[in-house]
Length: 172
Image 1 (cartoon, rainbow, N blue to C red):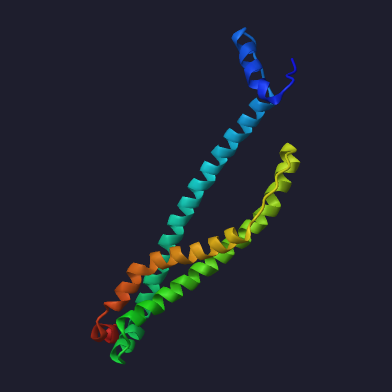
Image 2: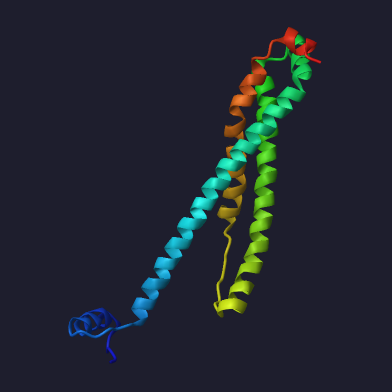
């Protein structure tokens, strides 16, 4: 059966189904593709959240190790009169730069996957997919990685601020 207008397809399909027949239209195909796309977005979103959590823990761990290895340096800076906020800023800046580097690395991997995935899908399933990156997505993802690193480094940076100068100098 063929509908004269696209707007009639759903109505005609419902009438045929009420008569006890099965129907399948391009609208049904479109809905199936939309559903699969939403499922894929959900899975990718969940992977993104897990990656975010793991990267935050990794940055916090890296910063804690950095502070533990540089305890004497922090003590000397405090004895020389460095403000507590300057010490925290030093570690937070380091964390932000680590986050930016991680964001750039993630962006590089994304660009490589952007080239690979459409080719694999085309060869396996005969599907053509186009992936696009916008400038705001690129910039936003790099800055977001830096902000996540800043948040993850907040507690280690405050730990560095609170190190006793006497204990720090004697620590090594």
